Image (cartoon, rainbow, N blue to C red; front, top):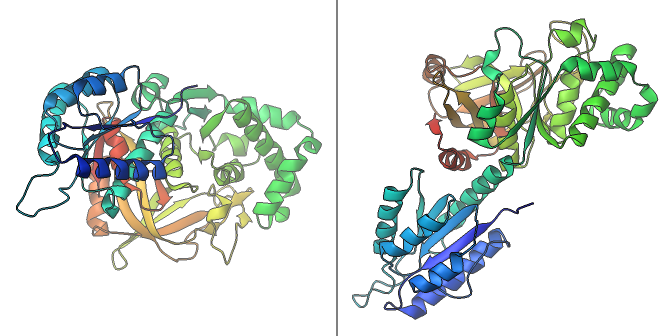
Length: 446
């Protein structure tokens, strides 16, 4: 299997101050290797077209970092764009000295030559940064671009499982396999929910001892659940977990109501919460693009994400309350309560997750939206998860946003956004914007 590859291409000509160029070249390699030790780098600056052609021959990178280590005319960049097909980060070096004397690098003029060539040859947004390897902004930008490119690469081998059909009136989460593959590179798998519940019904609980112990360890007060529902939950958890492991699943969108209440007799909420806690992005109501939103957020933050409905706003605090019946990851529960277990607020059957979520100074609200013309867009908003207790039965969090909340919600509704949003623990808004550009998708920032 091909490994993710970042290719560093330092171009220039030998008529500038090579001592300054060499130092920038070496410092750039040190920085890149500190971020990702597998970055492919040349043993010398590429100061001629012949050196450049030899270096890129046969390469198949997933991200190109094209740096004007000195000025280079557009023929250099043209060669790169002809031969290689990958997202490009164009890096301009800051002039090391401004003293009224010789121009050392002239990297910026070279960037204009490269940008001109890119605009003429490519239809994908160009990523760009200006500065020296020692600058914090450059270090942050490199990490963000590499992180987004790596996620784009990983989605090519990602399996997302849809379990059952979307309920009537919830078609916003429905996905087509060809759309999922062509836009995101994701493999969409499907299975009927009754196939899994039937296996659970016929299973002997003694075969789920490990899953029983896991649930008892993470779900507080699980033993207070009606015995039959507790047994059915543990068996269903094992069935889901086994199927996920056997088929290399990274995210699931599962049907929940009404079947799991009426036919199986036990909700799937607790199962999804346990899976979310193990970094298997698990969305309810068969929301495939909600599950993919969760997965993307989880990969960027390295933390489980929360999928919820916006159910209430407070203009004085400028907050949105996100809520759902009870599928949040156990590790996201508030410390003072832990991951409490309860019953579904409407059906009064358990187990479901029953707690408020822990606070975070930095958070990102994110959603992959599908427009009426069939194209996709990213919803991105920065916020703060406040230190607030559980707001309603189920699981909930209160997020303070940057825009005036009433105006923001009004625009979201008028623009036709879906009613499920992923809330991510951390500010990864820039990484999401970069990923959207790499996927050629519209970004809508709030």
